Amino acid sequence: MQSRFEVADVLRKAGAAIENYGLNTWQLRTLYAIKKCRTAELGGHIDACDSCGNVTISYNSCRNRHCPKCQGQNREDWIAKRETELLPVRYFHMVFTLPDSINSLAIYQPKIVYDTLFEATWETLKSFGKAKEMQMGMIAVLHTWGQQLSLHPHLHCIVPGGGVNKNGQWQNSRNDGKFLFPVKALSKVFRAKYCAKLKAKLPIQYEQIRQDLWKKPWVVFAKKPFGSPKSVVEYLGRYTHKIAISNNRIKSIDEQNVTFDYKDYRVAGVKKQMTLPHQEFIRRFSLHILPKRFVKIRHYGFLSSTWKRQKLKLLQEKLKVKVLEKVEKKPFLPKCPCCKTGNLNRIAVFDQRGPPAWYLGGSQSSSSCEN
Ligand SMILES: [Zn+2]
Ligand SMILES: [Zn+2]
Ligand SMILES: [Zn+2]
Image (tube, rainbow, N blue to C red; front, side):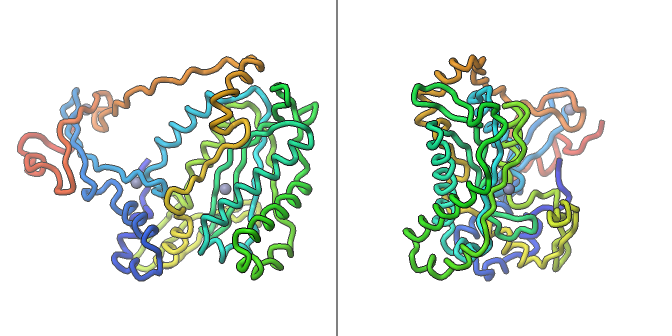
């Protein structure tokens, strides 16, 4: 569904001023890609309906992973792949959150701060698994935002409720499989591991925020375990390809301000609205542009790619999983938006110079739907 207001609209309103917002070149490049997404600047194609003859024009997508308009297909592909890797066991959703006191460092050293979040989280889970003599697995997705677009780095982890013992057999973390590990204990180990790593990587900066980092307990949150393995993947799919704000949360854009919806989790997730000037909105949005080639979805333990290739199949056989074969992707045949029954066939492609003259002249065909 097309949203009425888009992040790209804010960028267009702000215009060349965004060059002066103190953003780095990578952030600016990303913003320009989002701004150009599905506009004439990226070129496009012309399709004709094989039933009613209606001709439509479409502009190309930017495919940038931070673009609100370019998430859908990636998500579907990702879900399809993960579904072939499921085990018939209980899965848990855990969220590991960094404290606010890390934020100033996260702005200047995002790669180190976020890499360390992945490392400390995995090592924490791994050590709890080891105490029970089993190898754990984990899929983790980094989110860096809170509801108001401020910096709030946290890791969503999907963790099968058990692991592989030294004989390669599946073992539940507790006999009833109802429970993974106590979150209080997890959060203590998580903080200790994170701080030790940060100290080793950035000793001076660590020293400056050390007291704040240790002031409050860190938050590890365990959500209710999932009903079925399939629902895990669909659920995780919602998180993996999420970005800081979706276009449908934007409620209005005027010459100065942007207004968007957010949920206030301090008051039971009540929906509220927030209005920010363009510059502040863009600044906040840009906080969540990840460093170039930063991997935001990572697989660990028996779900890591090396382990998966060799042993996951074996484990699935032992657990008698009917392994889904990788489904061939069906070629996507868009339906005609006009008659809704005909198929669209591509009749021309064009670059940023724009559609061909015959299309603009409308001499051969009409671009408007007359049915
Ligand atoms: Zn895009
Ligand atoms: Zn999140
Ligand atoms: Zn048609």
